[in-house]
Amino acid sequence: MGAWLGSPVALIPLLILGAVVAVLLIASGLKDFGLTFWGFQYRFVPGEPDASSWGIGVFLVGTFLTASLSLVLATALSLALAISSVVYLPPLPGRLLSMVTNLLAGIPSVVYGIWGFVVLAPYFGLTLEPSLRDVLGWLPGFGGPASDIGPWGTLLAVFVLTIMIIPLTTALMREALRSVPRDLVEAGLAVGATRWEVVRRVRLPVARNGLWSAVLLGFGRALGESVAVAMVIGGTSIALPPNLYASTTTVASFIFSQLDSALIYPNLFVLLVEFSLVLLVVAVVVNLVAQRFTRVELATATTLGGGE
Amino acid sequence: MNERNDNLVPRGSSAGSSPLVCPKCGAPVAAAGTEAPLKCGRCGTPLSAGSPRAATSPIAAASEDRGEIILAIDRLSVLARNKPLISDVSLHIPVGKVTAIIGPSGCGKTTLLRSMNRMVELHHLQVKGTVRYLGQDIYGAQVNPVLVRRRIGMVFQRPTVFPTSVFENVAFGLRLDGESEDTVEKAVVSSLRRTGLWDEVKEALDRPALTLSGGQQQRLCIARALAVSPRVLLMDEPTSSLDPVATQRVEDLIFELKSDYTVVIVTHNMQQAARVADLTAFMYQGRLVEFDTTKRVFEQPKEKLTENYITGRFG
Ligand SMILES: Nc1ncnc2c1ncn2[C@@H]1O[C@H](COP(=O)(O)OP(=O)(O)O)[C@@H](O)[C@H]1O
Ligand SMILES: [Mg+2]
Image (tube, rainbow over all chains, first blue to last red):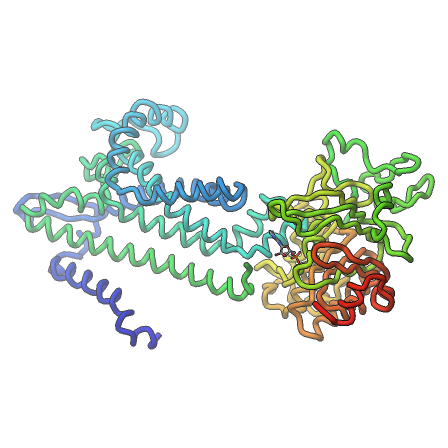
């Protein structure tokens, strides 16, 4: 520990983190982190700080709701993609699949946003949402009316987020699966396991920590995404969504979409800074947990004696 | 031990309905669910895979050994992108013996061994020629490689324990079959006893297998291979990562396993071959140079190349 603290270069990331937190703390003036801040009441009266109440509750629920749902979808899809490219596909198509997924990671958020807004939205409104309502309407969240503002809403945001985090989670899961020592895989096959049985009983358990770390980093990415979400989530109502078709809002997309107003209303500006602080803390926590998993992974790899 | 079925073709597939038959009288010999005899029950013909082609390869069979052949390798070549790793190898491995494969590093020992249970396929290598297990071509179109590996088990150069408990490591193959807890437990205990590990680990069955010593881990891998009742055990330099004491224990174990299993062991250690093997095959640059009883190979080799290697003039 002392060794790396002693190195000035190693201090740079720490300084950056410290500076960001400090600036945000000063800007917010630590005005209002009281009980109302963590509540669900949100009322903004321009120019009248006393009549306004800032509850972050709705935004946090929107954030965790969209991030968790997209994470569930992304985890399933990435796992399937990672397993097929590492285990099932021949080397060339496997590499091609990796290349394409990596390329997707480089596409700017705003492009995903406009794609969701223009291409996905009509499909959602006309096809997907009606059929989901028909088939899964009995499930909480899947029934109920469409939103009056159109197809933009929670579900669309979830889908766009899913597409956006898949490249990251797939790449990380692929690495985790690849790092499983080849010896162990062959040992499984040598006892007469099929390839699928080796995936289930050797690769997934051995890569477990790396896979969890991938899921958490994907979660972190989804929690913090602002631009694309703001473009497709509707963003007209600051209320808990009655169903998945309704519009809602997230901490990040709210900050992004209210910046212009914040220049006019100082109390809104302070609020957005406070929101960023919360987002920062959440992101740091998620990443720290993810890193814990990665470290455990390294430790197991060493005790295993590693493979080629 | 659970039942052995030597039919390598999955049940239900068309060829599966014609089980192993005696090459001489045509009587079926492997009824499902029973131990397949190594001799035909009707006419007594050994189920060796002796084929006309084998006779054309003079060193396929060891001179003094006319026992039953469990694995018949004929004119086998393994290629990587058209480059041969081993060429035209014919080797008939008799049942119930320990056969060693020796030769300098890179001569193709591992490749030959891994072609005996279709592990070469995992590296996208091309296989020409035949490998027959009790008369069935293990590369046959209908043959399921999973069944091949059930009958022809493998132990690797370094211990390959899974990061689970001692018990679950040995149970691994049995769990795949969905055996009852009772059957699994019996087989695990009997495999651990067979490998002499039982007394060392019986108090620690739930401990992570990675906490065992290297030698214990390697014997655990042998126990895991034995738990699914193979007939043949392939070992690729199984003691190269072990200290002398652990090596001794594994060698003792190999010697004991002979009564129930056929062992094929690759080793770069000639003394080890001399200590444990009944038969020794010497390979050089992808070819099989000599195959005979260990005594002959070491005391009166027929080939100059073998003699040079044995006497330490290269390698
Ligand atoms: N998958 C593979 N692709 C290409 N070449 C290989 C592969 N595996 C082994 N070889 C080559 O084949 C030769 C024989 O290897 P191997 O059977 O491992 O030899 P040994 O076990 O006797 O040391 C070596 O020259 C090795 O580099
Ligand atoms: Mg080798």
